[in-house]
Image 1 (tube, rainbow, N blue to C red):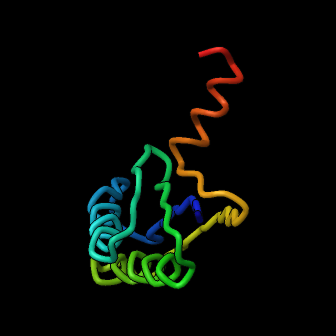
Image 2 (cartoon, rainbow, N blue to C red):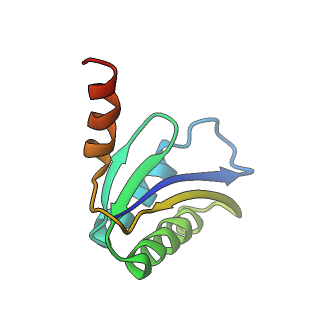
Length: 101
């Protein structure tokens, strides 16, 4: 299972709010069938296929340009674990278990 953290930042917009851009990027992830969790600082995504991951990231990146941004910074952190099939929730659960929660 591949887990990734995606942060997309439109640069040079006239507003401090970027929610319309993030909504467009999130819709692009949905359109590509990617499992995701939106957070206040980025988006966690997971899939079992690297091609699907990169296709979805590209679609999210391009969606920001379609919303009118002239420059976009996209940051991606990928954890590609192939010895076991763990979801994001299972990874968090493992840590919480060790914390006694």
